[in-house]
Length: 207
Image 1 (cartoon, rainbow, N blue to C red):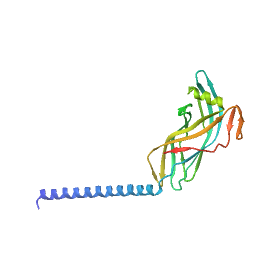
Image 2: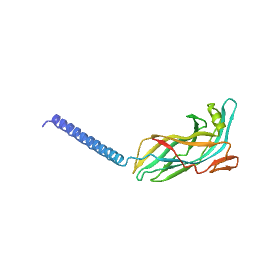
Image 3: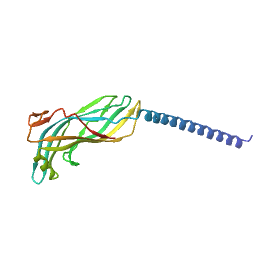
Image 4: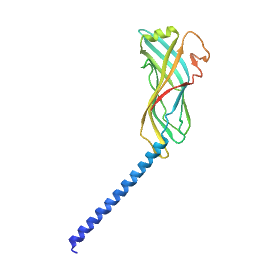
């Protein structure tokens, strides 16, 4: 065998070795991804369960041509119903809305991790100053009841073992009625505000 033939033989051997290494690596990665996919399909994460527990209204005043100034403190809880999947809450913003119109600035909730079956509770303030609103708000206030929605907009990730999924959009909407002119059971004065106790309102959650 000539030296040239020996060189070609060595090149072929190296190419086969590199190809085998590449194929083995690709097979390993594919097996890992398939295992993760199977675990994901078997466990199938259930979206978190949100409850609006209570709300304190410190200001809800209309002025000028339908300009609203509002300040609330709300207590919102989230429960992870999954027994084997954790939840990362990323960049959650909470705000109040009337007729699909945002009436307060968004308040950023701290990022957090929620273990299996765990419950997380937040009590943020939300406020807005002289926000233009629909004229129907004044009419609703005169009738004695205003329906607002406490909303959460953000991102979540799922954790299965050591695997952490990509980011998913989380949208939560909690209806709440504000009553004017009369005092009902479950409503108490708190300093300069009115607290609506024990609302325990189930929220609509989309992921």
